[in-house]
Image 1: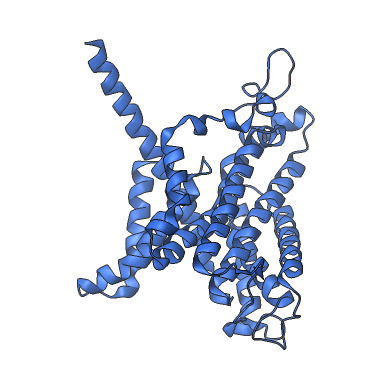
Image 2: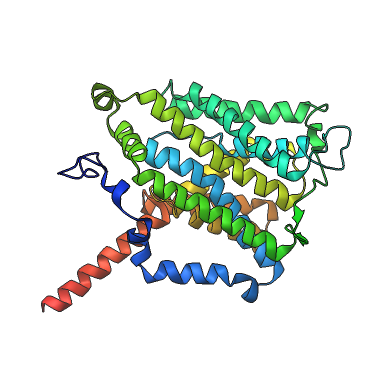
Length: 356
């Protein structure tokens, strides 16, 4: 979307800035309201296993992948350190909060440790983005991957702060208003609320003047610079926004497992986030959640399926890789692209019958 398309002809104000979020096209689709209803009533129709291991995990991974989608889809910057930022936030929750590792954790209450973790993770991601925006293309990917790899090895070898390869265990989770918010149903609604907040935040920012300018920087940075826009400042701001979203996903992740270890921020896990975003669709905020659902389903059930057929269960990543290749081969925009292609073909067939 260009700046010209997003600007009112008379006032020159961005059209998105004048449009209520209730008027967004997404809210005119019955399928959106159906999915929202299903998600709201999910605790009544799903077991605790599916509620946490499938749907809550999907929302967490989808939120982290959403931060990558924002950078790649609207900013043209592919970052492989989004899971690293999430892991940094998780480690900060463990270090500043309460855990079984009393010699490491400072013992702050969750309502103080969590905001501090979010702020520090956002700063960490912004600093990494400041380095990354000085490069383009494959070099951006390599810098962010190097940051992720360096953080993994640092946590794996540092015992005084991060607990080494064993990590930090039995991390305290929020309890207030007489509710244990890590119990299955309350925690599911926490993850759903955070995911919804991040989704609508990305939708809003993408339609706001900053988001439109960022898309202009993605499409033609030289022209935007000639028009007086600070290209690097917009890119760094995009990293800051995406880092905050990734940090929220990291906090949810550490609350989910109540522990954090270097394995959670490994290079392979960082690449998994890229796969999730690409499989779902890199151009729309809903794509990462679709990709996360597919990834979680395969990761959860592919192992049992392989064992059932007498194969090595550890090869479940082979199925994930084959699925990734198939989707990318048939659609450059993941499952979202396949869905749009099917809708266009169905509309053309319907129009053709109607013409007859």
